[in-house]
Image 1 (cartoon, helix red, strand yellow):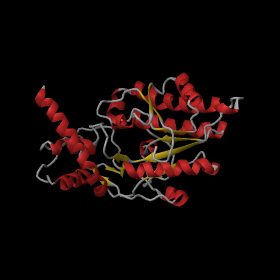
Image 2 (cartoon, rainbow, N blue to C red):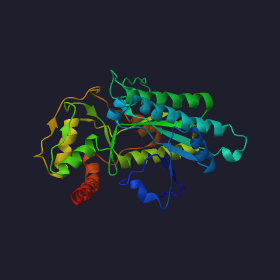
Image 3 (cartoon, helix red, strand yellow):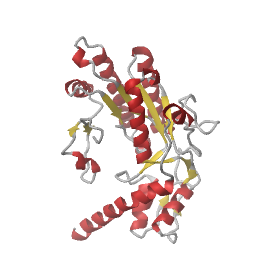
Image 4 (cartoon, one colour):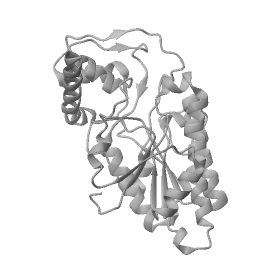
Length: 312
């Protein structure tokens, strides 16, 4: 919106605490699901959409493992619906229905599955094994198929663990740790604390998406490509928690390690050389800098929830 775009958003559940409500005066927000192909077609056609950021997904790994069918419908069927809408409108005889200049599909480092060679590079095979990972592998492959078969102008992005203000999925390690320590409680780590992951601040991800969208708009040679987005500073879960405790000043709240998590890949992290080279993108934040910008929002969230609880 800062760049002057008319923004249309679609979601099936606008949570009361979501930052999306701050945009209501300037963006059109539509309640619906990407599993509805007719809705996808009508929105893209009737709003004369020129670019799609396909960010919608069932994104919680634990939920995906316990609800695989809903995950596959959202992440796989939802993806082919977005791409199929683009394909159908791209074949429309009326030029007014053929305005779409590009789609960016948010995939994940999980699409790579468990690999022998790390860090992941973009041409590594898509070999997810568990429900969430498989859903991302499939969506990735479907996007590639629509580009090669129908020239649908799509690019794929693969990020590690995103964090930042506004994330209400409190089961994730950064929101979970922050909300606990800000209440003066130790966080419980479901794994053994050793799994290694990338952590990427949301503003760096947004900047990468915008740079890629602008390149796609004017340069079709990047269509069909995949790009890893990473600050290339992987760390273990315990290292992540320790850094959060240090920023908040609560090193006394030692984490409780359960070691009960299953279906965890021990090491996942990305090589971002391609996006650095092709787009000139580089992260502007390390983990600590991003975290310092994030803490205030969660302080307000915890304070608000505590106020509601005390009134109740």
